[in-house]
Image (cartoon, rainbow over all chains, first blue to last red; front, side, top):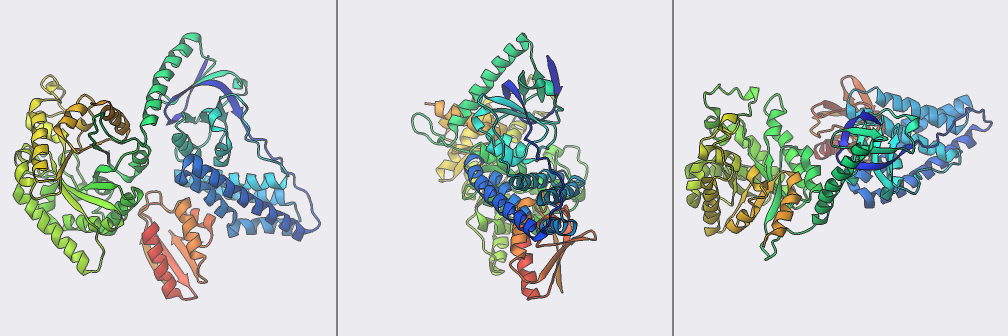
Length: 537
Length: 85
C-alpha cells in the first residue's frame, strides 16, 4: 500500500482500477521540404480541420458540461486564428524550408513558454491551451486520429496533465476520478471535474508501476491510496456508500419544487459573499439570492469603491442570475468587519456600535454612491435592496427619502432604473417588536437570526464559556420570528430568514408552519433543506 | 490618435473569454487599436498577444485608436470595456 497526497480539486470518493493515461505523443521530426507554399497550404488545411473539430467539441461539451465550460473550445478556435501564431508558423516554413508539423510544434512551444512564465495563476494555466491547440494541428498533419479511448471498465485516470479536449472526449460513464501532476485549481480540467462531480486531485507525481492496480481517491482529504490493504479498502467502501447516497439524493432534488406533501411552497435562496460564489449558487439550484453581502467590495479595496466599480459588480450578479431575484444588502461594515479607509474609531462595544446603516445615515455620500450603483444595476435583472441593522420606523423613512432622491436623480440623468423591492433585515429585538409598524414602510422582511439571537439572548457567540447558556432554538427567538412573519403577512408583504437558523433542518417544519415565505441559506444547504421541505406534511 | 484609460473590474482580468470577444470587436474596425499596460502594449486584434499582457482586475490599461474613424471607434471600444471588462 502506498499513499500520496495532492491538492484537492473536488470532493468525493472513488475506488477502482488506476489507468495511467498518456496520449500517444506525436513525434515531430524536422524535415526539409521543397515547396514552401504547398507546405503552408497543407498547414492551413490542417488548421481549418482543427477548427472544425473544435466546433464539434463545443457542441458536445455544450450538452455535457454547459455553455460556460464549453466556451473554452471557442477560445481554442480563436487562438488558432491568432495572427501572430499563424505568422510564426508561416515564417518558419518559408524561411527554413521545413515541414508544417515542425513549424507548428516550435511555434506552440514558444507561445506556451510565454504563458508558462507569467506570474498570475490564471494566465499561467493558459499555457496548456496553447499546447493543446498545437497538438491538435500536429496530430492532423501527422494523419493521426485522437486517442482518447480509456477502455471498457471504469477507471481512475492518472495523468501528467489533461487537456480540456481530452477530458471532454472521454466516456464519462467510465471516469471515476482525475489525478494529475500538472494543472491548477483554475484549469479547465478542474472545472470539468467539478461540473461532472467526480473527485480530482492535482500535484501528484505518478509512477509507472501503478497502472492496473486498485486505487482510492479521497477528494475530501486530498489523498491517493495505491493498492490499499483490506481494512482500508473496506472503510472506504463504507465511506463511499454514504457519500454516494448523499450525492444521489441531492441530484434527484435538482429542478424539483420546494413544496411540502400538502402543497405548501417556500422559496429557497442562497446567501453569498462575493461573485465567485455564483457558480455554486447555480450548481445547487437556488431560486435566487436571498442575501448578497456587498462588503466584499469594500473589504477587498484600498479605498472607497467607485460607483462604476460597484455597478459592474452588481450588474454581473443580476445578469448571471437571469430573471431570478437577487437581494443585495447595503454595506454592513463595523463590528467585526473593519476597513482601514473608513477610519472608524475604536469602540468598547462594537457589536452595539457604529456599524451598517448607522454609518450610511451619518455618511450619506458613501450610501448614495452604493445606492446609485444598485439602482443602475437594477435595469439588468431582478434586483432588490435590503438595509441592515434597523431599529426604528424613523430610520426607514430617512433611508426611503435618500433612496427616492437617488432614484429621481438617476431618472433625471436619463439612466434607466428597474423595479426594485426595498426591504429590511430584522436582526434587532427593537425591529422585531416594531415589525407591525415597519411592515407598512417596506416591501419585505429578512430575519437575520445570527444577530437577532445574540441581541435577544445577550450572549456573545464567540465566547465559548457561554455555550452552556446558548440555545439556538430559544423560544424567545422563535416567538420573534413568528411575530415578524405574522406582521408582514398582515399588510401583505413577504418575510424570510437569511441567518444560519434558516438551514437548521430541525426547524424546517417549524418555519413552514409559521408561514415563512423564504429561507436563504448557504448554497451547499439548498438541496438538503429542499429535501426537508419535501419530507414535511 | 484617440485614447482612453480604463480600470478592469472583471475578477479575473482580460481572461480568455472577454479577450476573444475583444478581438472580435476590434476586428470590426479598420483602425489600429492598441492596448497598453505598464509600458507593454498589444494589438487588440491579436488574442495571444492580448492575453500575454496578463491584465488583472484593478489594472489600468490605455487603449489607443489610430486611423479610420478613430473618434467613433474609441467611443465604441470604451463602451465595450465598460460592458465586458
